Amino acid sequence: MRHFLKITLVISFFVASAFARNPHFKNTISKENYIKQTGIGMDYALTYEQTHGNQMILFFGDRTESDAEYRVSKVQTTEEEVSVNLNLNGAPIEFHSWVLFQGLVAWKLNKFVGAKALNFIEAQEFIMNESMRYLNSGIFPVGPQTDYSQHPRFDYARTRGLYMERLFDTWLRDRTQFKQLVYKRAYKLNPKLITIKQGLNSRSYSVKQAALRLKRFLRQ
Image 1: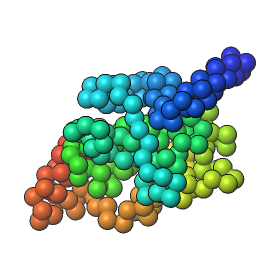
Image 2: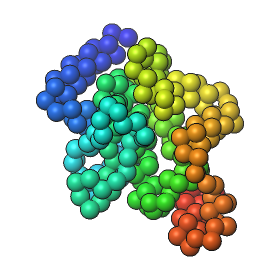
Image 3: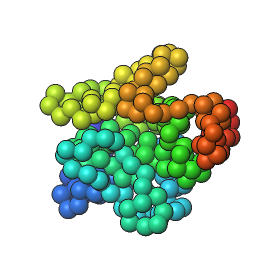
Image 4: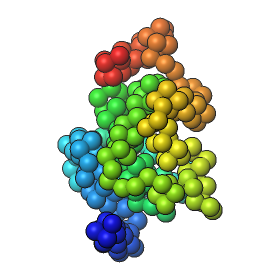
């Protein structure tokens, strides 16, 4: 326990000093100090870095912007990049790394399936399921101290349905119930999501092809 506390204190000091210099550096800290310490995190981080190297991942928006916790879009280069909502810059570094990890998974889907991949409910399920595997790596404890949705004053994570502890506990206990929670959250945030089956039956060639590529990616 003492060893864990010492590591936490060192990381916390590093985070505070680095973040004071450049707020965007928090994304780098999350990627290097947490995400890359897990096997699944290393896989997604290195896939991203094969395109962008160690280029800094930026925040986007302002305090009034709450439409998404991360984005996959063109910002600094012609290639799609991940960026994180500025409302999360005050989140615990553990929670922040969890959201950034989801962004890296979404980026991989966008990269290898196509821009329309994130319009499918199965893609959203895949992202959240992978993020549970990341939490299950045990790199940090999942509880009230790390779950930003439980903050008494800042409600951004709650409004986005980012209930880290509840989702993780449900994932461990009942995968069917977990899927139901994920679907309910995803449709609430984006009612226009469609299923792969609907995509395959679409009259739009691009949607049909996106559904086929996603189906192959997920091996469904």
